[in-house]
Image (cartoon, rainbow, N blue to C red; front, side, top):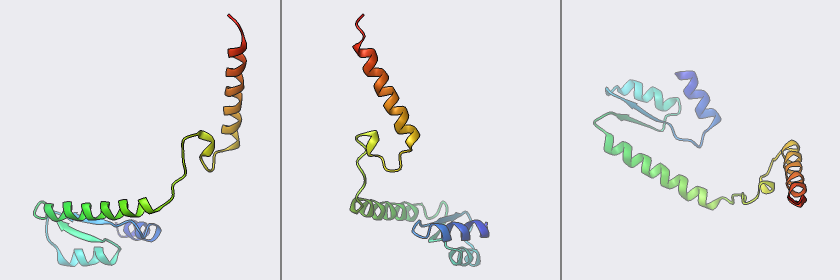
Length: 105
């Protein structure tokens, strides 16, 4: 658990980690915080605090995500990083569709 928490908090420092336990253990809570845990809750006693913390985190995330400029995905050609194989396949399908629509029944 220690290595997983350390690795996660190192790789994703902007993502908060919430820990929940059924028994209060101050020493364990302190150890978790040292490993990168943002908050430590006792379940089921602190359910309201958990809900409030999640709401705060969600609101912060929502506010930050609105500030970012996200690419438009209205067309498959606007997706950044689309591979050449996908573009080729898309052109082949489009051309095949055009040819089949020209053939009279």
